[in-house]
Image (cartoon, rainbow, N blue to C red):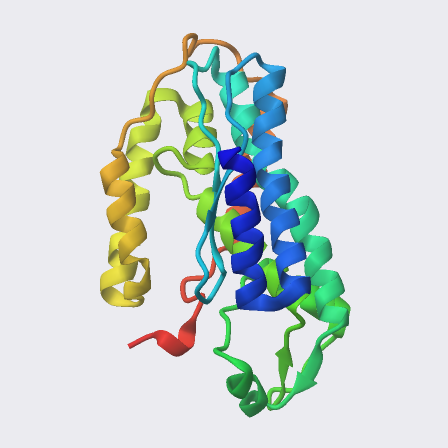
Length: 259
């Protein structure tokens, strides 16, 4: 019942922040992400909880996302990899069409009109690539006033990039541990170090996340069989997920709030 209650509360909080189309789109994206983890966990016999959605009735998202709990140890590296990668892939499967549909329904306006509607958004490389295909070249003195569905797609990319950070218990942390084993702790430390430099030198908005990752620690719990072969197919998928992280990440998601 608590899962259903939190799900309904999150629908209400996203409706409050972004309206019907935003709420519908972002809930589908988040649900797809978490169900990717959930059903892949069931496939490998891992005891996983249904998603816990986190309502947050304030801008900019109306939610703090969703999480699942894994209640048993991971059998081997291949299971950890597949469970970790399933969430971001399923989320992208719905986020990218949301961006395409949302851009088609968006308006090309002057920058001032965008500021009147709300703050401007940082544009990840993947979003920019899709925008160029859907809308073509936009004049320098014009901007895109995103439809709520397009904004939900942008949020989906933002959530994907956060989850793919190669640190701790994030999806990216699971993927990197699957690829590198205990050597992944070095990647975690480098990631948190770069995030700390980003906070100090450019964007303090990342400070809460950096502190949270330090709290989670630099070591990933081992699987029951860390020597289980991962295979080249999954290694290439893992490299692809690293590429997706860089294409989805933006150092300044909300540039209007930079000091």
